[in-house]
Image 1: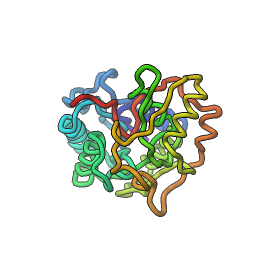
Image 2: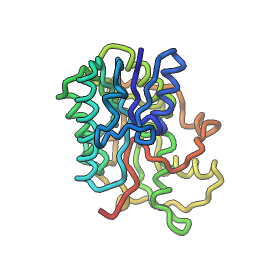
Image 3: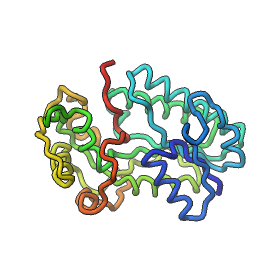
Image 4: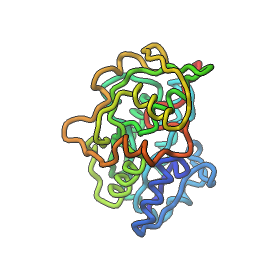
Length: 264
């Protein structure tokens, strides 16, 4: 099949494109750096020519709530309308577990707008909600660290390996549209503070962690709201396995949950 991956230069997009090519598919990589601008639609019709399926693994720049919703809305509309013109038969959107249960940060509002547009749009679709990635905890401390001290919310999460997410997206894209896919998660619930401590220790980075609900995330995200629902698809890579041998080179990339906070 010929499959386009939007956000192809990001962590998930890169891994997903590689997984598709590993399985013998023709991959069209879509990103601004490769000459396709989703915010304007420039280059999109050309990129989607002959494409059977589109995987949207894009992220938003770190801005305020209204700007994030507008960005995701604009890019998603461009993908859907260009996909309709090109005869795309399957639109796959990577989303986040739990965003329908809490108001959440700006990024969550943007992802909800994406989901709304895809579900109401002109193309057959699958929405894939995934939990936070294994490197999410240390990334959060990278956002907040000042003078060797970092704040972090004591979230309960069930993190997943980026490669596992990519494998699921590649598998789903070549199949039939499913509507809303079951939640996709890693095998074990984890405390975000403990994850951050262990990841920073493994990387040789010394930082004092201050658990708090008054920084990036508030208490509306406490409890089980970020955990996968009943019947979730559980992927095999544990946090311990990732920590032992699969640490990515880039420590502070954005993931599924939230871009770097701003003052807006």
